[in-house]
Image (cartoon, rainbow, N blue to C red; front, side, top):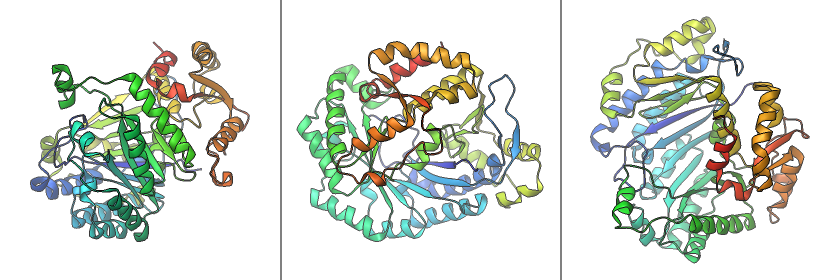
Length: 459
């Protein structure tokens, strides 16, 4: 059985800086975009053997997991940023053509492009679809101009009718998946306005919605403004009210709360993000992008475009052969080739404690799969399973966590969306023992997920 593998590509260019954002970005898109795409392709060539030598199992002793050489079946490609929709159609085509050649992306089931609303046009939509993009993720954040101004975003003056036409156009062109991001939890957002935002998203015809509670990140403009008192502080109580209202609205429209921040109609969960939450391997390309080999090694690219271009502006590899050539390679050779050109890569070998804590954080994010107790025992030990249950006991009493079998989770999932044909709801645990016990976040627990995770993690 081939585990799902994914590639994330970070395009760091933005037109302007949003007040709340702490992702790595640069405002020099026009000057550097073409040079950057060449550098990005060169990085992909240098790291093309990343998937060739993956751990054969998740080892929990102090040694690195054994590696085996496999021909990878990469299932998802995600273009994020920054604002990847800023790229011209020709640069997008150049990038995707190169990636498909380098990594032999014949098994892709999902190709996501993050899109800024101001980049939407029929010409661009048709070009993206022609290039193989299957899923659009619209970074709207708010349909209200006043709220967009609070967030430091470019004001979106479009009326509801405009968005309905955009949604119809996206569907008519043939995109199979449409997702949208909204933010909540800021003082100027009333419950009625929040419900209006949600209804505007639904009118677009989306089948996936990501809801992000506004948080203050250090060194952002919003953080400075609130500290200085020029903008009112955030309210946890208001965030709670917004989230509960959203859950009510989305459940009534057939959406499942499948991950802490994500709701989807049955059959439309984000495949790429599920690789993150199930411990799958993924390669991150571009400045600030993160990678994980599915075992003990996490790595990230330096968040510095100038350094990145200085390293990858010239092709670091003399060959452009694709990953198919791994048939004639040993695991050691593949690993050494990947490492040779990883000049800007910060690599971390996880300790057993870090591995366990990562396991808790990633698995618990899924509202449908959570932490399988038999997986804890298999990957770590019976002792770890017992320790986890002991730590979970007060959280279970507070109803922040629940202990359920796969069957119960599936039945509750179907019951939560009464307007949906229950036969279309996929069982996320269909390959597992349906009577296995799992620790899952409750709706209340999802609101304080970080605190719940900290209590379950090793000190």
